[in-house]
Amino acid sequence: MGDDGVIREANRDDLDAITAIEMECFGDSLSYSRKQLRYLLTKAHSLCLVEEEDGVRGFIIVLFRHGDSVAAIETLDVRPSERGKGIGVRLLQAAEEQVRQHPGIRRIRLEVSTGNETALALYRKAGYRVTGRLEDFYGYDHHGSRDAYRMVKDLAAPSGAGTHSP
Image (cartoon, rainbow, N blue to C red; front, side, top):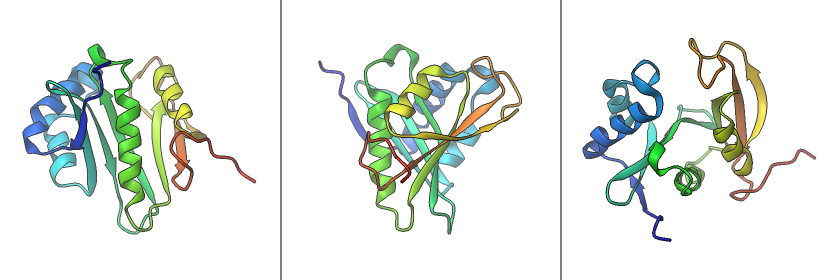
């Protein structure tokens, strides 16, 4: 199909593309600023991957906290014009594989708007489960809601597999 780009670790040279994608996905009022993205890319204890084919088409940022067994997906963005090509799924899988290599990390978590049906479907299909609802999580309407779901995945589970409690 020709839609499978290369996934690699992001570097400073990707900041312009990452910032542009963030703006395309969230607009001026909701997106991370260039300064915030630069910090997440270069200073934070993070993993930042990009997917590219004739330019960066998407990215994911995962944060780690010292002494914590849970990594956090901060953001997963795919250019609106490139959605539906599996880029988000591939970025998520690649990030999970790298997170598994971090000693002591057993789970990965994220927050997603209760109104973001596309993202919810992606995360559920990838094996994430809702563990709670965070009321007024966002200070603004995000996909028609201010609430978010916290979702978690046990990294011992194979990619794409759901997790089940005994």
